[in-house]
Image (cartoon, rainbow, N blue to C red; front, side, top):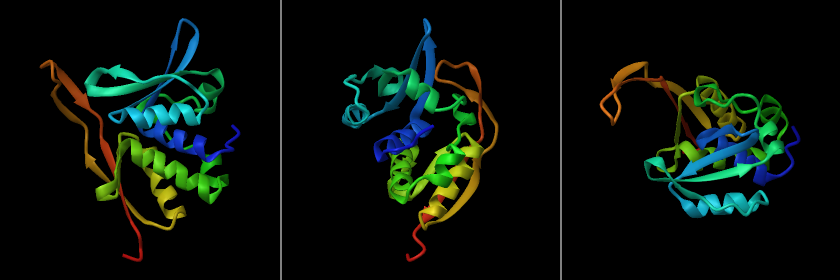
Length: 173
């Protein structure tokens, strides 16, 4: 894939944190969810789309983009626990692109006030830790929740995937 713009790097980070892909009637879609509608409007605009986010389940907004090119650039993995930062991006991106990727991931699944990112993908946690180190942060990965059995809001039994947390901090502080 050709990673050329900081806007794409931000979108890639946001997609890795909050996105999924689907194929409906042969059409390829990329979906990203967030509680901040304006953030999704700006994201679409920055990528050259005029799509409007809509209300989705769980009290969030969803932005759906139809694009074969973008679908292909995001790679084969589409389940949350399979996601990774593309290796060629992590190794070859400019400092500015890495910063944009970091910001997109943090705006998605991160917690800015606590300097952490949670994910069900151990590979993505490893990649985010490496990203943090490349940006000059100290970063630590740990398992915050193992496999779990519980009940979903409907009362049915459900399995919970392990959750990984990467915490980071500026070494100067």
